[in-house]
Length: 494
Image (cartoon, rainbow, N blue to C red; front, side):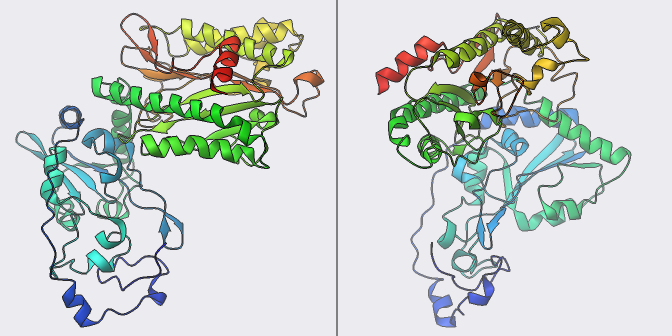
């Protein structure tokens, strides 16, 4: 990384950097103002801009006469003066169709009520000027936002052309929010300035803002054509990452921390094809597969063990895939591994069969868990039998399969989390819903209630589905599911 640089003359100096900064002589500051070529760019509309305009219209219709404020969020420090890669708030993305590296931290979308519904303005950081204007030193002196440090942003005109939204400098945001007094709802906790300019209300005001979050979340439940296209792409890239991993399995077995090699292999695909990861990759070998969210990925990958890989590529549009496969590291399942795998496969198949429009969201989970409970009962692991274990006041089968069997998928891996319970998860499936089906079995290595041969075996199989008018379509069908198919696929790649 570059060393500690020049003074940030805009007041946006990175944390902890100022004591190491070098002064900028006046002659150098003057030189920075001159000699630059015109690098204006054409900014064609983002591919999803027309769909985002329809979503903004729905917000305007739902909240007439009210100001709605949706921030993108800002940079978050990783250590001292280094930030995590910026990822905008999902509601902001949904309403703007902003994509990938073009996304600008600290942008704020404001719906201002007018006689025709709302005028919508995106307050954002424009390109760093170089002519000594109000932010003249920002180009080279602002290590967090300056073009010299982090690359070119669009001008305000370029942003307006790309997104189809009137754009204004962030510096104008305070005047806009302190203007005329109108009822205002804010997505809070994403922008400190916004939170300060619009003090949080209690009672009915807090309920109103919770209602906004609910609406923004539920509006993402049914995906439009463009969103489905983005999810197909994200899942396709995810499938490619699984192919990459199988090709690298042999190499991983020779490394002390082979899980890290698996993680890095998939992550490379995510950065190559998309913006990055939809969530931290789970590369869990051996008994680590019994930890539902194993992300340490610091263990070996041994022949004879299983590798549970749960991973997703986030596309440049910020839509993500989410797929899991449990792979025999040596290429073939042992008898006991196959027995567990086949039960999970049967459970997933039962869950998939329950996917159709009009079905309750929970139906596929119930179908999968019935298969799991009956299988565990046949193995003698459920005292009292499957029916008793499935009773709401029991749930004893969950000792070996604690979590749910799927979730909505979209801009967030666990999408639409602020939706009302009656909409999701107690709602009905509808065409345009995208969700995962992912039952699993996890026999902890120290569980004395199961036979020793089962201890330390964890299996999960997860696929992504689009609900259609007459059923469900598997978006991740490029990966095999059945044990024989998995073995044949792995052999073909190795």
